[in-house]
Length: 455
Image 1 (cartoon, rainbow, N blue to C red):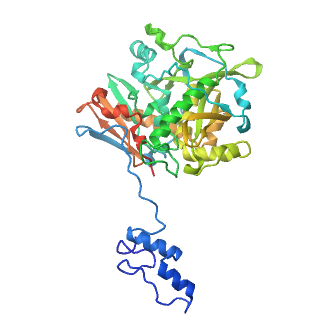
Image 2 (cartoon, one colour):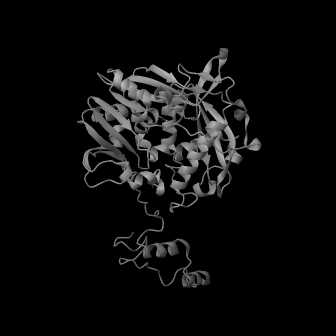
Image 3 (cartoon, rainbow, N blue to C red):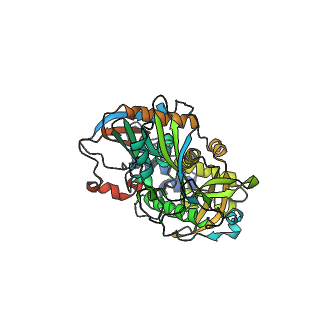
């Protein structure tokens, strides 16, 4: 606003714009415009002055919600600014594969030949659900925590990637930190934001503010999660040419559970994270394809979403995907920086040979239920990391710093919570006040931080 919080540019001291009685002599056009109050920029200034802002000022920033309600009894132990995290660097030693489970099916190369002109309908997801159990509910990780004392930190690739790419995040998210004896478990809450994809999280343009709106962050998150699940299953060609891991059964078979889940390969890999710190994590790959000399190349499959190009001021994929694919990807990187960084890191963690990105668009911009596949693109994870400007040594340094910080905690349960409106996270002691999910209504909001968008 102006000096006194009211007047715009050129305004009087008390907010009333100063307009000379005569501008340009007897110019009838100007006199008429002055009478009607339609003199372009001046009129915008007058309207804005009534609202206490300059006409060129942006709309107020939306205040976002935390991914879980912070209880009064929780004590803040640490507050870490992302700016400090981005200064660090650490080279991690190569991982060791400890065990592998499952069977992965061949990626159907037909999907590599799809173009916007030969689009293919996206089918409803396979009724078999994906298995994304948190760290402490994974029977393989549990077995090694009980039987192998060389491991003292346990996680999954999704949780690791969320922490490693944290400076790119905009919405709120949280990780449950549990210390038992000399061991550390990094967990997600069931039904929390970690179980859902975001869409346009880091975009400048914002969708609907109403949570139930077609293009609200909450609605887009659910849509992206559905389409990603559907795409990763549709592109598989069945059991012909499938690759079996060391144990072709599901990890749950270790404890006698025989539920049917989507076919995925699980690789349990260990990293030496410093002196006396050894991390064991479950990572995954979704598909396999044949490389040269008939070798198996493991693939991570993900879906990018086009929603409404007019709402988000993005490139129309149907028009530009074939001729300007680089520009399309650059826009996605701007609008989904955190998601793309997490996907890249998960591929590096799992040792995947390739990343397959599917370009999924709404059949009609105003219908979020029906989608089509417009094309796919294939990358090598290390090359893609360079393309999305991901500093991998910095990502490892961030994870190491968080682990080192958490290993100093006494036994108990803690919560690492990304602030929804500032580039930082806080570590809360939740031993008093509890973290009982049955009592916490917010846990069922499935990514509540996506109700509103970030500036």
